[in-house]
Image (cartoon, rainbow, N blue to C red; front, top):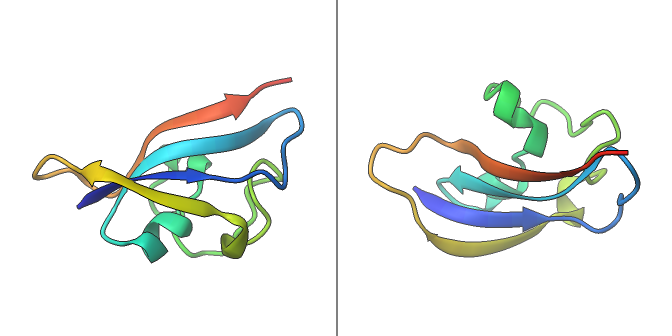
Length: 85
């Protein structure tokens, strides 16, 4: 399992996520992880709507490999940056 920094800059108003650190097996899985999935890990690849709080499609998400996760880490959101308004 890898750790990735995911970010987006196309939807940056109030009540949006700008980035998150996620655990994922690969870049594609990281790109398709939505920051609000922290509350429901089953939210992978079931449409990309985050109630207007994230990028509008996976191709708008930037992904950067930042390291390896500890053995046994489950895929999902580790930490997210939310801009409340």
